[in-house]
Length: 355
Image (cartoon, rainbow, N blue to C red; front, side, top):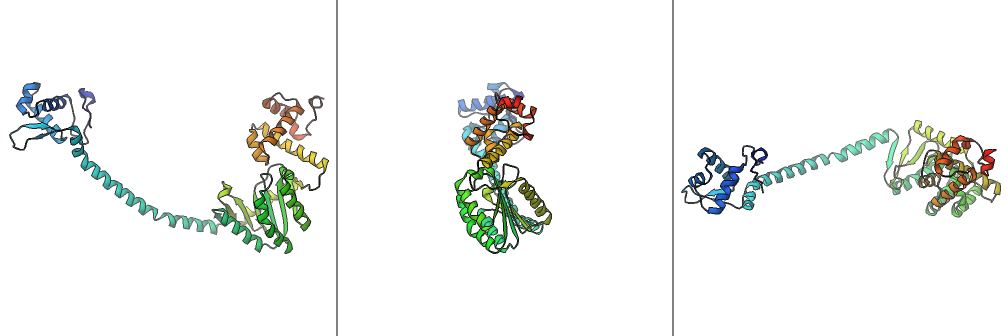
């Protein structure tokens, strides 16, 4: 219901901007409610207001359906309940609102009809430019199988994130065997943490014997697959949702160069247990952790970046702090920078660091 204020300065306007409800309308309406039937003369006697103002106020109340004249036309009028007046006043507005909503929906539908046209054209432009989005895992799987089947020289793959899921390894067995049997070379990069996964190590051992080359690196390489140096497949921002297939030569060359840089920096995947190699790998991981500690990364992000479990990452951080004598993470960052530990072997004890 429209509120009625006695203060003219804060009088509220009806949807019709020509109507202003003031104290006089409130007084007339109150008198009509009390008397049941009133005339203009009754109101003049009761309010003392000039006749012209009273007539204008009564007309405002009629417009708002708060009073109505009696059916016999004798000049008397009665008060109408605010709820009934509100319904009468708002009915046309609500009808107009419904018409506007229907018109809005019609316009929305009309615009939606162009979405498919736009997206189809955009996809075609991307395809001509050498970029194709594969929106889901099924599309990615079919594309990988197709590209592998047509490859004739080399397939390069890099998989950060630690040990490979068993279902992924199992899925790639037949595809990798077919490539090797046809004389297609395969080179694969993993992170160091893959060394400590039984399933990944067994996979590497099996395919190393068949001719695949595996290397590992602590950090610093992207996830990608390169086929014959003609196509590169990279994950979308959310890898679970698909990937992007790129055939533009400049981008493929860029991706291949990134892979080759990582490959040169990586070390061969250690299959048989070698204490010296284990130590070297662990030290490499710790140096990568120190680089990230200096930048202020949290343990959870460091673990994800290096393909480690959170617990393993925290054990490495504790070992680093112990060996350099750091009181806390901030102190560790200071000591790492102060003693240039990113470019030298990690000391075995704080005493060695001080010497």
